[in-house]
Amino acid sequence: MTTTQNAPLVPSFDDAATDRKLAIICSKGNLDMAYPGLILANAALGEGVEVHLFFTFWGFDMINKKTMGDLKFTPLGNTATHMPQGLGGLPGMTHMATSRMKRSIAELDVPEVPEFLQQIVDSGGHLWACRMSADMMHLDEEDLYDEVEGIISAADFIEKTENAQLLFI
Amino acid sequence: MPTTTIDGHVIHVDDEGFMTEYTEWSEPLGKALAAQIGIEMSDEHWKAIRFLRTDFADQGETATLRRVSVLGGIPTKQLFVLFPQKPAKKMAYVAGLPKPHGCV
Image (cartoon, rainbow over all chains, first blue to last red; front, side, top):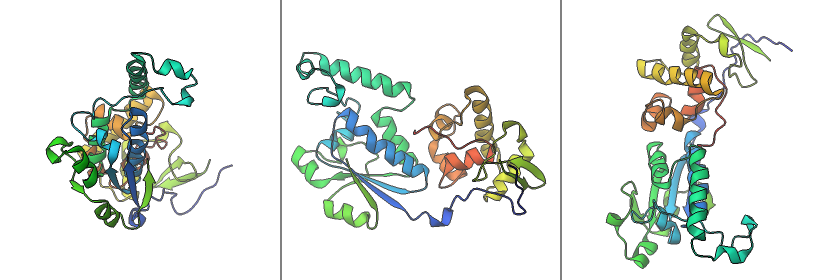
């Protein structure tokens, strides 16, 4: 069917209406649990949404310079791998599972965690570290990824993300 | 498929207005499409759009933002300056391509 309009049909990019905000709390340090937050943050930024990520507890591994490039995946305790649970505990299994997952991710042209964080920051995303976690782990800004804007309290984060939609991962 | 007329060019588009026929596009049309969404084309804009056109011809799908920055050589930050708010979709629109499907 062919129709012709008088006014040109142009997609609505809704520039004025993008006052949407997304807050993502990253609380896990496993490789497989790092990606959902990063991918959703990146997708939201590409849609013109303001995005704030808050790293807390084990999520600190994603922004700790010592660990951020070396997150791991283990099949142990994860029934979704559909492997006998005993296998997960064998020596070298975590290393093997991690290498495989990293390869699958790289094949999709998805960057590793540090590069992904940089892409998020370049797209206008904000990274925040949790004050209590920093104190617990005896870490300060020097230990954290340079693009982290600050170590802030939970209350500060809640204040910054007023009216945001929130994801806890 | 509906058709629409942009600056005297009759083009086939989807329901949102993205072009559906790769070969109907030309640079003068790209300029007119950009004007429709408030973008005035500069050399840097063209660099991105030409990359998208070539990459689509090679790959059969629209490049994601990451692809434009890594392979097209235009930093992500700059893409957000050139095509504000929704760079991937806006670039696809100006380049006469479908919206990108990739997640990253």
